[in-house]
Length: 80
Image (cartoon, rainbow, N blue to C red; front, side, top):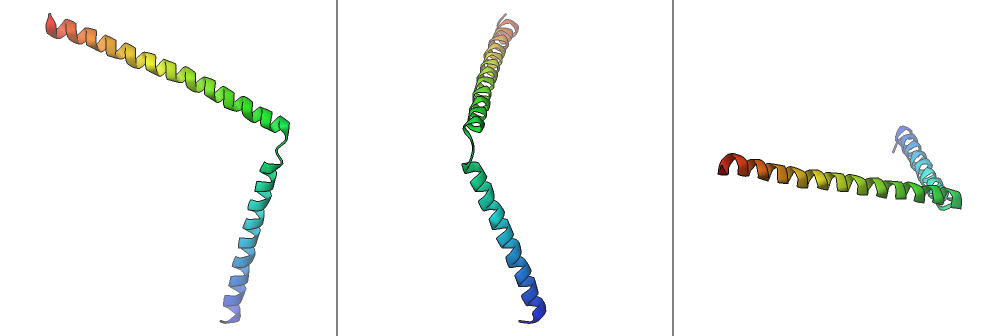
């Protein structure tokens, strides 16, 4: 190995160590979440669940209503 290759390897190793250190710091920050942060997170989860339920009910009503409307239209046009 020549000196240029060794320098490139050292730069790569330093970059890897830097990225690993950043990942460990990020994991430590997540573990240190306070109760207030946890409460905010739970509030957002509840809001997402409520919105999800509202959209599910709306979508279901539209699908059922569209099916009924299509069935009535089909019966009127092709049967009579």
